[in-house]
Image (tube, rainbow, N blue to C red):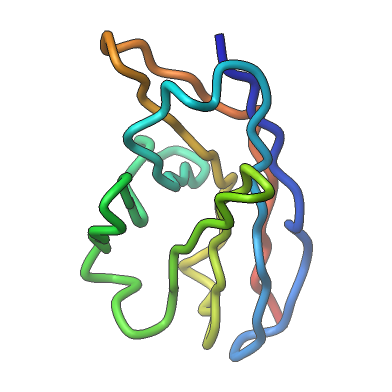
Length: 116
């Protein structure tokens, strides 16, 4: 199994920045896919950004050029650097991993609020 713990959420004004972290423990050597997702009130959970073992990245159109996904292999941690935040970025952000065999693991979520 893999355990995921997110951190770094909070409240920020429009135009501000936050960096989310997702620390993985357990059978981390089985992870091959990682991503960030978000869910706003009354909306379905949506993909924000993903990466994999080959460091291929993918971003939602709404965050391209503003968000950057990265990972620190030595720390078993994935990051989401969020710049130029907008009110519509307000949501609970979740990290997700997929391991060999297809099992998915989710973190508990961290709240991001963008408001003036």
